[in-house]
Image (cartoon, rainbow, N blue to C red; front, side, top):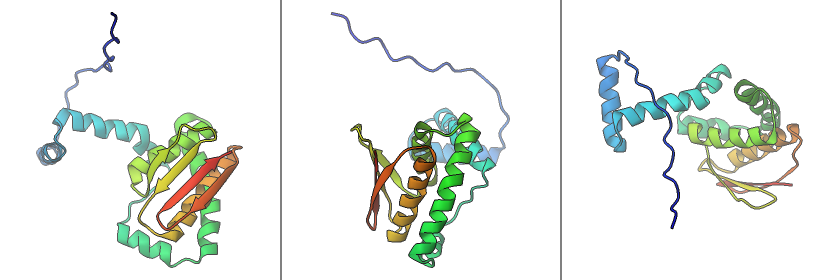
Length: 178
């Protein structure tokens, strides 16, 4: 009886780097907290930067505390939130896709949504393998954030030629690609 072949390991290379002792200490603390080796943690951090971080940096993204973010989003009217989302949804995913993959497409918009979820922690991403595809974004920032996400991603998909239906609640957005 033949078994499945063993999983292929990614090719690695040995390199030497000089790291400030305080940075190494922080890496060791974080690796211990996550119960991984320092090597694994450094690989994860570098992969995150190469896969996502450098592209986000080019677009001038910023970090905010969750409380500041909630305060900002709550001060806008629904119409202002929707308008801002539509404008941003037509430009940010397109710029990100162009920076990372050289062009905008539905597949690249989907990748943007997944990557953005893992890096920003502004929502959690899940999807179904069904056709049409259904994407669920969950969060804890309220209805106005749901309105923003819904209109942002509808604009992004429509810009890439994909029609989308959306349902929103206080803590979730459901996007149905048609």
